[in-house]
Image: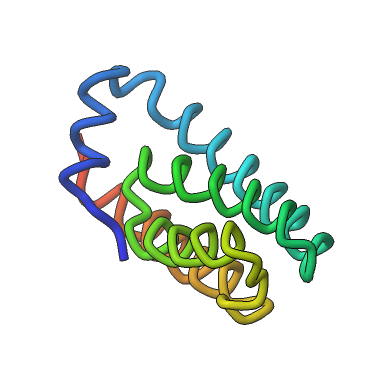
Amino acid sequence: MIDWERVTELREEIGAEDFDEVAELFLAEVAEAIDRLEAGAGNAKIVEEEMHFLKGAALNLGFQAVSALCQTGEKAAAQGDPHAVPDGEVRKVFDASQTEFVGELPKRFAA
């Protein structure tokens, strides 16, 4: 679910002291985007836009499963199918990924 190599790379790029703030901001922004996605379900343009945002944000922080799911949804919505990814699936995968991320992060970067 999580690409830990990407997480390590990002943490090294921005510095350990700023990483927690970036991760917290990411989690909040993604939660908001999922809310917008769910509110716009059925609207191909909204689904495409939110899936695109989510795909990029998730990929940036190593949320591989979320990014892959959103790529599928974005492509389908661009072709007029906003229902290719079942309602609630992005939130489900994000929640599971977030649980893994929050649980594993302290272990992986213990001082």
